[in-house]
Amino acid sequence: MKTIVLYESKYGAARTYAKILSQKTGADLAELSGTKAGTLGAYDAVLLCGGVYAGKIAGLKFFRKHASLLREKRAAVFAVGLSPADEATLAALRRANMTDRLADVPLFYGRGAWKHGSLSAGDRFLCRLLHGMLRNKAPEAYEEAWMPAFMNCYGKDCDLTDENYLNPVIGWVNGQ
Ligand SMILES: Cc1cc2nc3c(=O)[nH]c(=O)nc-3n(C[C@H](O)[C@H](O)[C@H](O)COP(=O)(O)O)c2cc1C
Image (tube, rainbow, N blue to C red; front, top):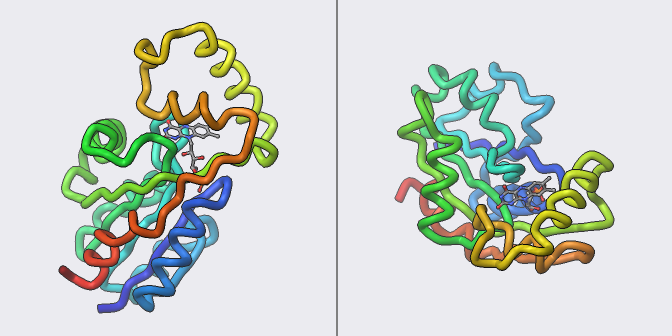
């Protein structure tokens, strides 16, 4: 079974998970931008590791566009965000992302990292606005699961990554 791990990562956590996956399973590794659909022809299984930004998993546009090609293969997604790693987060990510042609694609999840100093100007601006809005709210009133972690991490560097999140994905790559 020949597998490729594709990743789309703004701040590095999804890339790091993808690299570890590739090392632990022997799968090939490639950044999604710069990967042509034709490349997938050589593989039996495709796994996407994508960061989560404003509820959306990065890289799914490619998966959606090439859904018919991926249907002939094993395909799965590993999403990386600040939200807690629990069933509620998985269900919310699935509702917002894994619709229509992606409804049957397995979804895995692991927590990512927050590097305040590395934020792009656009993200920094957005996050400053969000922080200002949440500052005066009670945590019980936060609308999104990632907001408590966001408020804890805002203004500093925060690493919530853990290789153990990859265990179910490694099982998937190994066909279990
Ligand atoms: C602009 C922005 C929006 C984000 N939105 C979410 C979100 O909706 N849900 C979530 O769990 N994490 C969210 N995060 C946290 C990222 O998912 C987290 O930093 C993750 O590590 C990103 O992956 P990357 O390090 O590979 O870029 C957001 C981060 C930024 C900068």
